[in-house]
Image (cartoon, rainbow over all chains, first blue to last red; front, side, top):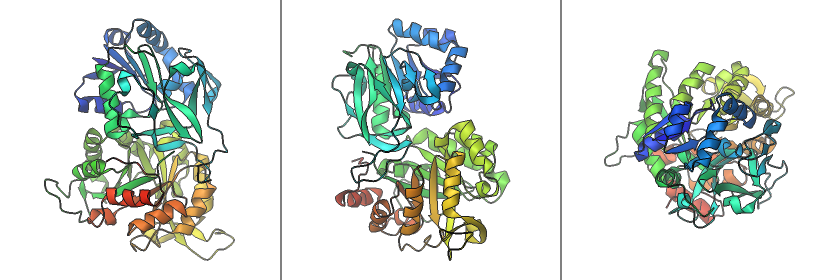
Length: 212
Length: 259
């Protein structure tokens, strides 16, 4: 069973629906007992870093996440579920989980496209991800596949060895990160059509072992 | 680099699509769920379902449509039409839509944008704007006025002012519909689109007037639109989404390829 962490962060049902479509059983939950027994954990997120951290702590889910991480359980972070893994987020000036070294920053306000158009914030829509080779969760993704993004802040890992995918939007940023049994993406695989479903499917079969 | 989005819009009344959507084997052409799935597979980047159900006691039918759509398509989709309250927004989002679009309700009571953005996040709230060209005046300096009721009622509100105000209140995106261009198939209102899109910091979806692929090219380039809404040009089978995207790509517009 896959536990989808419920920390009162926006709409979690889209991840659940995508997993059901793929034929995996899952449960949206904040129960420590259920999370303790889950084979794998998805840490989704729509919302702001400040409120997310507040809710995680209140529900004791920060401790649960660390515990399961150390136990080797495969964990997938999505969007804000990626961002709060880092030390700090500029959004609401929030100290975060500190599981990955680095910080989360607001996109600069003066970015331009190659055609000279002012780039808008949030970064909303479909964009490519150049995945690093060799991570089982990003296996069998056709080159040039695009994924659905919606975010105003981006992760800046201080250790480049943790970067599993990069995307360009004015600047080049880490759109996928990985470390041992933890993998996290800035985009929404549950809203990214077939290649997104492929990533979710890969995660559901992954044993948590990777060279990252 | 971010792709420009192509977004088909389906009008739904009492749970059925209203336009004579192209005949296809094995597809119930009146069923918005099947049509949504069809466009999803064709490479639509998002889908808009616009509820034109007149009677409010038939609204639960739309929620059922939204739930069934959410089980079968895995790209963002939004629902507009008849969204008046926070409760309406919540119902549609919990049923599985990514975004809700508010139009006349926001003109009449702008605070609904702020409330929606606070409750569900800016990215969930799309402001639909219906706009008509008028002679510039002190009240309407941009020469574009906000209208409601399908263009029948002029609101005395400047479109550029309203777009900026909606951004300030927390709208995550604007769907900009030119009432003058709507239904003409003669092309989008480029000047209006460019005006709004370059003066706000949130994405703008151009709407109204699409009749051929060139129209999308113009509005995405000259009009500076981030996305283009299409309806009859794909519903009647004149074009496929793939054809449109191939044309745009040949002309240097970055689009998402699904083939």
